[in-house]
Amino acid sequence: MVQTRKRLGDLLVDAGIITEEQLQNTLKEKTKDQKLGDLLLHKGYITEQQLIEVLEFQLGIPHVSLFRYPFDEKLIHVVSKEFAKRNLLIPLKKEHDKLFVAMADPMDFFAIDDLRLSTGFEVEPVIATKDDILRSITKYYDSTDSIDDLFVGFDSTVEVKVEEESVSEEDSPIVRLVNQLLQNAIQQRASDIHIDPHETKVVVRYRIDGVLRTERTLPKHTQNVLIARIKILGKMDITEHRIPQDGRIKTNVDFHPVDVRVSTLPTVFGEKVVMRILDMSSALNDISQLGFNGKNYERFIDLINRPTGIILITGPTGSGKSSTLYAALNNLNNEEVNIITVEDPVEYQLEGINQIQVNTNVGMTFAKGLRAILRQDPNVIMVGEIRDRETAEVAIRASLTGHLVLSTLHTNDSISTITRLIDMKVEPFLVASSINGVLAQRLVRKVCRDCAKEEQPTAREVEIFAKRGLSIDKILRGKGCGTCNMTGYKGRLAIHELLVINDEMKKLIMNNEPFSRIRDLANEIDTVFLIDDGLEKVKKGLTTTEEILRVALSE
Image (cartoon, rainbow, N blue to C red; front, side, top):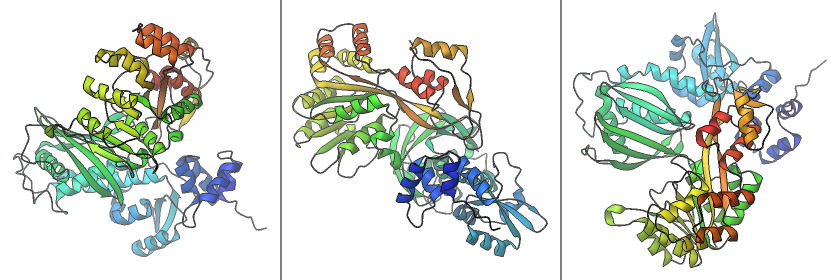
C-alpha cells in the first residue's frame, strides 16, 4: 500500500500550531518561488523550532540543536564558508564514507549533489534552524580566521601606525575584522555594537534585546587600526582623537542594505566607539504591529487622526520611541498631506516625507528648524525631541495654529510629562490647550517561544497582580535553548501607557493642580498604566513579571 505524505500546511493545522484560516491566507500570498514554511515564519505564525519538528515528522529526517554540538573542526576545511552560507548548511561529522551535514532545507538536492561531487562522501542531511546554522558558521569559520591570523606580522608591543591605505584595502585584515563584527551583529539581531578600550585589551560587546553581552576580546595593539577603519567608513576625521565625533555608515552585508550610526568618545584608554544598527524593516512598522492593546490602539489612532494638537511620546533612550513615531508618520503619509520633520539625527529616511537634520554648528537648532517649517505650509510636523523651553513653545504655537505636531520627551511616565513641561517654564494654559495625548512606552524582552514552559506563579507574583486588581494562575518562562542563546528570551515588545487629555484634565492643568489629582482623574477615565499593560502581557504569556518590574514601577 502506497503511503501518501501529508503536506506541510495540513500537518501544521493538524498539530494545532496554525489555524486553517492562517494557512489559507498564507497560501494566497505565497509566490511560486517562496516556501510555505519561510512565509509562515516571516508572518510569525510559527517558530523555527515548530517548523523543524513538523518537517522531521514529515520527512523522517532527524533534527539537531547545534548549540554546544561537538563539531569535527577538521571538516570545516572540506566545505568552503561561501558554499556553507549560500546553501545554509554546515558539516557535523563523518563516519566511514558518510558526511553528516546540518541543513536548513534538507530537500535542497542541488546542494546535496554539489557536496557529494566536491567531497566524494555520501551526504546524510539532518535538520537545524537557520539561525543555529548561521551562528555556527560565524563561530567556527571565523575562529579559523582568528585574530592572531588576521594580525600576523603585527608586533604586539608596538602601537600600529595608522595609514589610510592600510585600513582601506578590501583584503586587509582590519577590513575583514570590521566586516565580520558587523555581519555577526546583524545575524544576532544586535541593536548596538560597543567597542570599549581597556588598559590591556579592547572588548567588543553587542546589545541584543536590550542587554549587553561580550562578543569577543581583541589585543590592545589592534585598537588604533580598528577605530581608524570605522572612522573612514563613517567619513570622520581619523586624525582627531580628542573630541567626540559622529558619523554614518551605509553598507551592504550579505546583500542587505545596512545603515549604521557611529559615535566616538575619547576615554582614558583611547576612543570608545558605539555603532547603532538601524533596522529599516522596523522603521516602516504598521501601527497594528507595535503591540498596543485594543483600547490604547483605538485611542492612539484617534489622536493621530486629529487635525491639530500635540502628541508626545515619552520614555528613556532605547524604549522604541522612534519606531512608534515613524509608524505614526507612515500611517499619515499620503500625497494629500505635507509632512515635515526636524530630527537629530535623521534615523530612517522615509519616502514622501521632508526630513531636516539639526546642525548646531551652524546654528540650525530644533527651534530654528521648527520656525522655518511653519513657513512651508505643513499639515503634520515631527520634532525629534523637545529639549528646551524655546522648542516647546514653538511646538505649542505650531499646534495652536492648525498643525498636528508629534514629538518625544525624556520622562518616566505620561503624567510627569505635563509637570516636566511646566517645569520648563511653559505656561500651564498653553500646555492644557495644545496637548492631545501623551504615550509613555518601554521595551521588554519576549519569552522565547521555542523553550517556553508553563509555571505556577510565585506568592510574590500573585501579590503584585492582586495589587493591580488582576489574577494569575500560570506564567510562561523560557528555560533557555540554542535559539535564544540560553537566555530564555528572544525579541522584544513594547508596553504602553496612553494618557488622553480631556476637558476635565485641561482644567486641572490650567489650575496647576497637584500631580496626585491628575493621576486620580487618569484612573477615572480608564487609563491603562505601564504596569497594568505589562502585567496583561505577562498573562498572555508574552513576557515575564521580572521584565515588567525592570522597566515599570509597581505602586
